[in-house]
Image 1 (cartoon, helix red, strand yellow):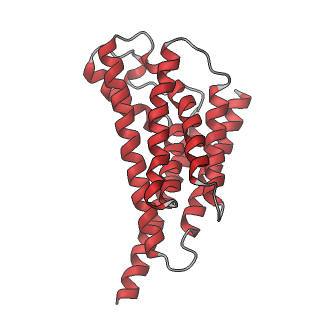
Image 2 (image 1 turned 90 degrees about the vertical axis):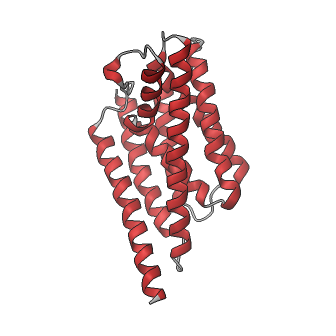
Length: 221
């Protein structure tokens, strides 16, 4: 009975993981990744609530960002207790990236870099042995600057109050997504007794597919 319970839990966790990532990939293919991913129908937030809601929405409706945040959470699950330092580094530098945009400092080819980051982190998930923790933290931090720079487009011209609430919104939702992905990844690793990272490797292939679609769209315009 115990074995049956473990196999059932493993099956359900893998199905949930693949189903969610599959939906994300379909939506990525159907969505123009080069759009600014504005919430509020493109309107600049004018108050605390609008800023916060826009911040919550951007990493979700911006499915290039969503795929990367999921990848970061799943990679964190492979690195044990220290793994959460990867998404934390990413989230903190997204705040920096938004600040760079608001200071009107231009970063080169942000859409291409974001697409490459999705593809690269998907590839890392497919590997039996990923980069060491420090390299993953550094890579996530660099990616965070560019993802945050893209987030900044939605808040340009806003007053300080909606800017602050916008930053809080996207920081919180990214943390929630990474924690969910981290938990799903940990459950999968715990419940699958043979080839424990196989499910996460399949997730990595899905994210790679999303990255390829995003990169092609960014290059071809």
